[in-house]
Image (cartoon, rainbow, N blue to C red; front, side, top):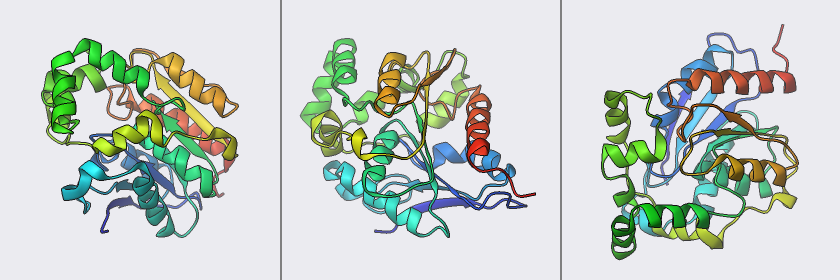
Amino acid sequence: MKLEIITRHPAEEKYSTPLLFVHGAWHGAWCWDAYFLDFFAAQGFTVQAVSLRGHGHSDGRSTLRWTRIADYVEDVAEAAHQLPNPPIVIGHSMGGLVVQKYLENHAAPAAVLLAPLPTSGVLATTLRLARRHPLIFAMVNLKLSLYPLVATPTLARELFFSASLADAKVKEHWEQLQDESFLGFLDMLAFSLPRPKKVTTPMLVLGAEKDTVFHPEEVRATARAYNTEAEIFEDMAHDMMLEPAWQLVAERIIDWLKQREPARS
């Protein structure tokens, strides 16, 4: 399985621990490449973003519908294995679930979850979407495809972006969205939920006030499951790495990482 991996090396490496970014559903490594990769490389980190199988330019698009969350975990393990040291793993949304599952059986110095899929799964999110868009949700189940939920820029904005993000930017990001695994959705619903008691990795959990996918109270519950407290960013929607105030999120992550590993003098 050939995976698309985007890597940025710092002009001056200040930290020996690399960062590995894991995207969410419908996305690919491109969502980190917009702002985060260059920003974190400029801070002195070696950074890498992987497109999970069936996403971006990775292999596996033809079998995406039947891909499991466990397959995505294997992809993260493969990407991590290519780095010189075990990376700090940073996951967004579904990628937050993949990171949680990865940490159950793999060591990592630390982890960051952005708007993560809750430890309780996506039942509440699914019910909210079904109530808002019953016809679209019926189409999802008829076609065994999650793409109808993001089939227009308007739907993409509703799920991922705040009103403050320019229409042109929404369209730019929407054009890169794609289908997601239907079997993976079932895993997120019930079959492959996190087991927080198996995870001892230090964790930073961040959420967004205006997130319509995973509400702040769900993010807080996820943080509590890992014996920490979530931090919620005001006036921000689900795609925290692409929102107008993305740099506030990146700077908070940097501050937390620096507390764990001081820069080389």
